[in-house]
Length: 444
Image (cartoon, rainbow, N blue to C red):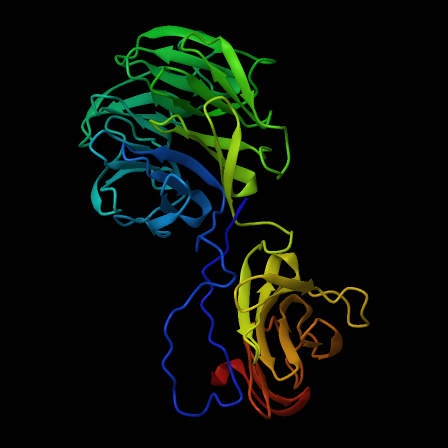
C-alpha cells in the first residue's frame, strides 16, 4: 500500500535560533514516503493518451496529476473564480490532443487546460441561465459532453466551447432522468450516462438519440461515476453499494469490484469517478476514503494512493513538525489528536495522545517544538501547552481558556529558546510555564 503525507515544511527552532542564519538544502521528505500530496473528497478522474492520471480534488479546489503508477507530477488551481481557479471542481476529462477539461461546478462553467495546467479557455452553458456541470467526457472527435445538474440535460460542445445541442430533461421515462452525474463516450461514438436517482445507465448516439437503458433499483444503487474502455466495456461506480460493476455495451453484468464498505484495500466508501487507461488499468476515486484505488480490468486490486487515516504513518490534517538533536521527527497529527515520531529516514517509531495521564488526551494539537529532552505541544482546543518527554511521557501542562496572563484562546504556533517557550495566538513568554511577559493581539 502506498502511503502519502503532506509535504510538510518546517521551521525548526533550536536554542541558537537567534544566532547567524544557516543555509539549508533539501534532502528528503519526512516520513520517507513517495508522494507529497493528499486528497480531500476527490470526485472526477481521467487518464490521457500517455497514461497520465488527472484527479479533480474537489474540496481542495485543485487538479492533481500523476504518472500511471501513482507518482505525483504536479497540480494547479485554488479556490476562486478567476481563470485557472476552482470552486468544487467535479468531473474531469481529456481529449485525443491531450487537453484537459474540468467541470468547475460551483463556478458554473467548464475550463480547458493544457496537460501542464496552463489555462486555455472557459465557457458556460450556451443556452441556459442555470448551469452546474458535473460529469464531463470527450468523444473520439473531440466533442465535449457535460451533464448539467440544474436542467438535468446533457450539453454538447465543440472543443473550443461552442454550444452544439442538449438533450434529455427531467422525468422518469426512457431518455429522461432525475439526476445526472457520470458520463462517458466509447470508441464507436455512443454516449453513456449514469442516471443516478433512477438507478440506471442510459445509452445515446452522439446526436442524443436514445438507444438503450439498464439497471433499476436492486441492480444498481445510486450509480455515479462511469467509464468505457477501448473494448467497449462499461464500468459503473455505485455510491450506495460501495462497489464497481463492469458491463458489456448492452448492459450485461460481467464482474463486480470491491469488498464492500470500508477503508481497507479493495473496499470503498462512496466511490465516485472512474477512468480506464488504454492499457486497461482502472482508476477509482474512493471519495469518502480520500484516496484513489487502482484495479486491473478484471477487478483485481493493485494499489491505492492514500493519505488520510488513523493508523501509524497515516495522518489527518497534520500541522506542526519539529526535530530533536538526533534528527528524529515529531508531527502534530491534528485531527487524529496525537503526536507521531519518526526516525531521520522517515521510519515510524511511536505515537502518543496523552491518554491515561493526569492531563488527559490532546485535542487538535497544532504547533510542536522540541528542546533538549522535552517536546512542547500547542494543545489548541484544550487552550493550553503540553510538555512531553521524547518518548511521549507526560510531564506537565499549563494554560486555560481566557485572556488573562497564563491563559490562551486556541494557541497554535509554538517555539522554544534556551529560556522561554513562546506560544501563539497572543504571545506569552514563559519559563517552563511561569509567565515572564505577555503581548496581546492588539499589539501584534
